[in-house]
Length: 164
Ligand SMILES: CC(C)(COP(=O)(O)OP(=O)(O)OC[C@H]1O[C@@H](n2cnc3c(N)ncnc32)[C@H](O)[C@@H]1OP(=O)(O)O)[C@@H](O)C(=O)NCCC(=O)NCCS
Image (cartoon, rainbow, N blue to C red; front, side):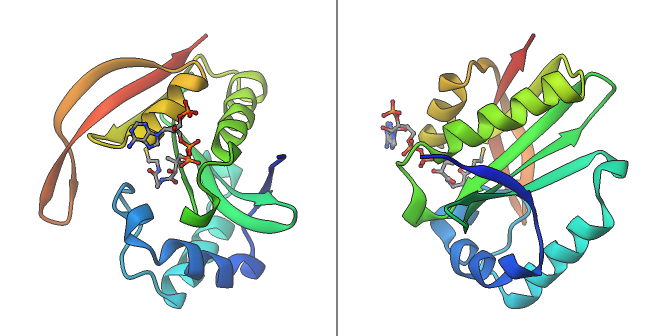
């Protein structure tokens, strides 16, 4: 299985709506609403076109065989560090797509952007995500109590990092 990282475009809107209107996916993500509407997808595409690499927010559509299977991003935090975030549509879980996509985004971060540290905050309980990070050479650095707030709910997260 091979995935490609592409820029998001309007052609992704129908698949974004289909894949992200799923609480099994969005409950693990800080900023993705549920239900996920056509308007949410349109706003996301607009956001991606307005905040390209210039603003140091890199967001990519993950495609396999021409279909959108998920998304992955790098948010630059400092001259040497960035945070990654990612998701796959539920019907695409278990195929190794994200292991490949994380390798691509971390290679890009370390090799093209000269980063020294890439982090991921995983909501407590998201075992699949933790395994994917461990497979990609990330290490657990700590357990952060109430580090994030989604709506009215505080969330504990596990901080993972890959440092070179
Ligand atoms: C996180 C995500 C990208 C992982 O992708 P995936 O394709 O589901 O991952 P996999 O199916 O390859 O599973 C990863 C590992 O977790 C294991 N796993 C799955 N469920 C498990 C469970 N309940 N307990 C223990 N291990 C479990 C799998 O066996 C696999 O391990 P292995 O490679 O050693 O066999 C995907 O589940 C997703 O998009 N989830 C919703 C959004 C999200 O969580 N984003 C990340 C936010 S930090």
